[in-house]
Length: 435
Image (tube, rainbow, N blue to C red):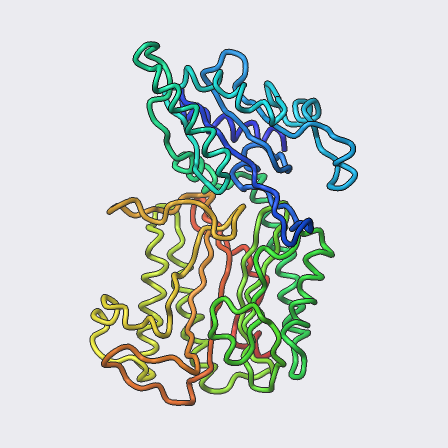
């Protein structure tokens, strides 16, 4: 993987030219007093370095004569490592991660200026690390004070996300291998959950079964809090209590995926707990499935990203109009978003190192077009909660539709000549859901 990280750094340095890019690691998190959360590295920092420790800074300075890739890391401290794990240390980081130079993190303030003074711009994202934010600003302001005398130095700070996000948006072969593994494990968990679920079991039992499979096959754990939503809970988009007992004639909506090597899967399926849809559940499911099929067909290189949402929404609105749950002119309903009481979220998002991965969805007035190597979720849904209120001047909702929530989500890779449904091994047909 070191060759992969080196290629990523090289691509970024080609984009920043005479600038200097600075990336900080994620901070360590503390829950209660001295009990720590599991550490999760900052995604962009990990993307460029593979270094998986806190209190670290990476500097990319393509204009520097000797040190184009520099790391600042925690030094070895055996008495602390006994408590919190072995550190790579300065020498280890240089040997393992290919940095031209590595310093102890305590020397950041002293050593950083030499990598800034000949740069024409600093690329840095001001995030949650206030100390690092202040350090960057302090050095930039000092260099600006002497700029009239020296004529050199970074005259601007640009958000590094504007550069790295576009790189992360297109997945390499190595990234795709990790994502395929995350998908394969998640597929196994979803298929097991459908067999395991039955009336009388609790949502948290389903969750436990799935997350056991995640860990059994080497995943880091859930990519996000698992949503195991039965009955009316299926209408709560980010339901995570997972404490209800499954009942006959319930729908069970499962939105869950694992993280493998920091790369994520994201899958949703909805199926009847008792083995058969009620007539109303089946109708809603068919509308959502058709919306998803038509939206997936729009995932093609060169096609605008927004078409997947526009396509799914139109199918859903047409279906709800046929049922008498929406009424009026379809174009007006779409323009005024009168469908939002039933479908209030977007149809998908980028997927990768982050579940809601980085990358533009729109370029001002210009569309963001798909390109080979993108991975996007396609996840339309219809939610008719017990308390759902129709939009103004829309029909009342008959009780027989209430409590029905359906979402179907797949992970789609854009290929050179079309797309690949990475998650296709999780069935979603009516016949499979009732099987």
